[in-house]
Length: 237
Image 1 (cartoon, rainbow, N blue to C red):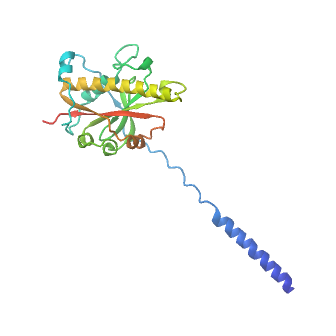
Image 2 (cartoon, one colour):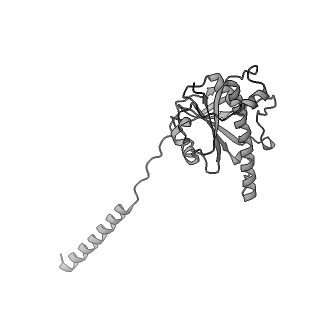
Image 3 (spheres, rainbow, N blue to C red):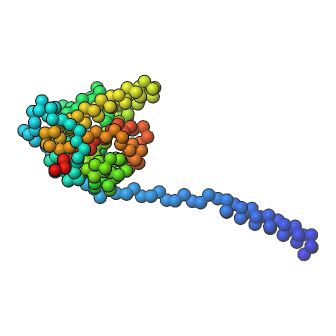
């Protein structure tokens, strides 16, 4: 072979090999396959009807209402759990309206129940707790020692999409939404507090809840707003 031709072929071959290697090694690694959605082992919890014959007279319950932090880790009975959620925002009329008021009856404050076994969302219309996340997330959500060991922490979350077909985008509209959510959550926490007074249970509102931690635990959409928490349990003897 002519030396000049051989040199030309060699150069072309080297350039081609260089381009091929560059092409292969510069490609981004293949994206890993999407992780399959983990099925929850937790079953929905069907709630019992409230016993409307018990409890303190309203004026006595108001007199005795107090923030109680000496809460034990003792598990609540299924009846107590049911009545706590019903008191918070359960259906109390045939037309589907609730025990707590809501702006123009827009039920846009979701109620989550954080338990040692997992996190559930309260479905008032079906009177049940639906599982959202499995595991004990209390230390990731609440900071107080008594809350981290309590059998129940309620978390109140505003879902703007339930408030209006087109959630408000102006600052004044967003402020109105949050004010209405805070009013609704406040009424619900007071309902639970009065119920707990009659049952000799402890309850305390948690304003310093770990909002970012809770959002991660339940994969909360970014437009949802965590309003507050409420720790509930048996009083320590």
